[in-house]
Image (cartoon, rainbow, N blue to C red; front, side, top):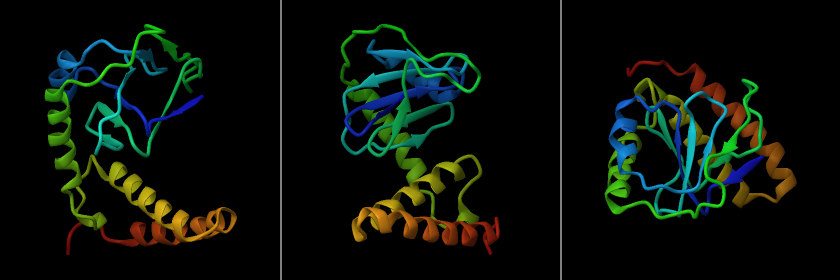
Length: 171
């Protein structure tokens, strides 16, 4: 089961021992939450924050505009079931200091230049996902739904092959 996060901000904690997690977790208010299938993983659901989208911050992912999360009672590939921690708890707003912190961290990720050869290791997956999402969005606006799917597939394949063939170090 998937939940679109266009109208939510979800803090997806995969590693609660990383630096970002240690900084942000104490600042997070109690809200609707779910255990994920990953050991120690948790999704914390918050009211939407304008300007945030999907980003990976090393151990913590932000799922917002353009993203989704897997929800209970889905089964993780490990065999563990996603489960609500506090079903029925209201979804609360993120405090302003947390929003400011996230915006600062996200800005650092977004400041990375686009050519693959200059994208630092550790955020290449997130950069590629954003590029594919941008391409999908522009394709979806230009074509009717059925032709868009086949054209999108062809364009993505062509683009991905170009990215793979590029050198991995700046020239």
